[in-house]
Length: 401
Image (cartoon, rainbow, N blue to C red):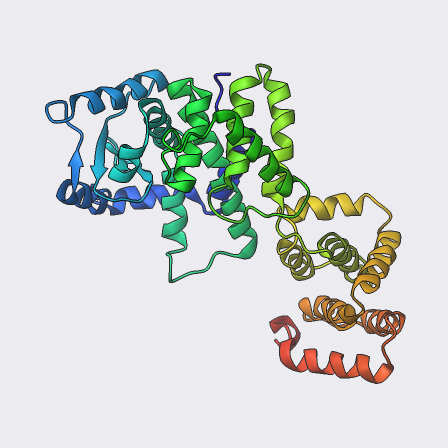
C-alpha cells in the first residue's frame, strides 16, 4: 500500500481551512511578515539542541536523509536531537518559502529506539510536514490565539478529529519509511511505556493480542479518543491494516470502524436520543410559525454540535425521516432513562422559540402543549418561560427601528 492519504482527513482539512478564510489570511500574513516566521523554533533548536550534521553524527544523518529519499521529499529539513528524557519527537514546517523545515527527536527516544523504530518516527514527523499539518495548525492559532480566543465547539471537534486523522496519516508515512510493521508496533508501545521491550522479553505476538483486547473496549462504545492523538489501540490497528491490506477499497472499509470511534463526541447513554430530540424538536418548533429563520437554524446546529461531529449532516438525515414519530420516540426514550430531564427538554424548546427574537402565538401554544405532554403544570411551564424570557430575550433591532 503506497497511498498514505485518508480522504476524510483531506476533506476536513479543506473545510477548516476554508472556514477560517485560509487563502485570505495567508496572503495577508505573507505580506505582513518579514521572513522571521521560524525564528522562535530556530532559536531554540540552534541554541539548545544538537544539530544532526554529517560531520558530527554521520550515521544518524544518513538515516534521516534515507527517510527523506524513501518518501520522495526534496525540501530542505534540519534535524535536531534535544536533551530530553521524555519519549517524544516533533516537527515544525517552515513558515517561509526556502527556509528549512525542522524535525526534532528527544534524546530519550533516540536512546530507546532501534534503527527501524527511529526510521518510523522520522518518517512520521516528515509525514506531518508533507501533509502540511503544521501549516493548518499555524492558521488556526493565528485566527484563534491560544489563551485569547476560544474556538466554537463545532470547530473544536472538527479540529480534534482532523488532528487525530492526521496522526494516522503520519503513521502511514512512518511505515513507508521502514517497511517493518513489527518495528512500528514496538515503537508505539515503547512511546507508551518507556520500556525496553527486548530487555523485558516482550513478544510482538503478545503486544498485538493485547492491543486487540484494548481496541475491543473502544469498539464496544465504552471508550472515547478525545485527545489530539488517537489512542494507541487505534493507531496500532490502523498501521497494521495499512501494512497488510493490499486492496485500497478493503482498507477504507476496514478503517471505517476505527474512524467511527474518533467520530464519537460522547458516550453517554442519552446521547443518541438527545441528538434526535434536538433535531426533531428544532424542526417542529421552527416550522410552528411557518418561517424557519437563520437564528433558529443556527440554534439547532449549535445545540447538536455538542452531540454530533457533523451536526448539519445529522439534521439533513433526520429531515428525510418521519420527524414527528422520531420526536415522540426520542422524548419517550429520554424520559424512560432519566425522568429528571423534563425541565431541560422544555428549556431547549423555549430557547428555540426565543432564538429568532420573534415569539409567535403558535410557538407559545406549542410550548404549553409540549410542557403538558411532559407532565408539567401550567404554572411550571409559565415560570420557566418567564424566567428564560427575562434572562435571554432581547427584541430585534428591526422591531424597534
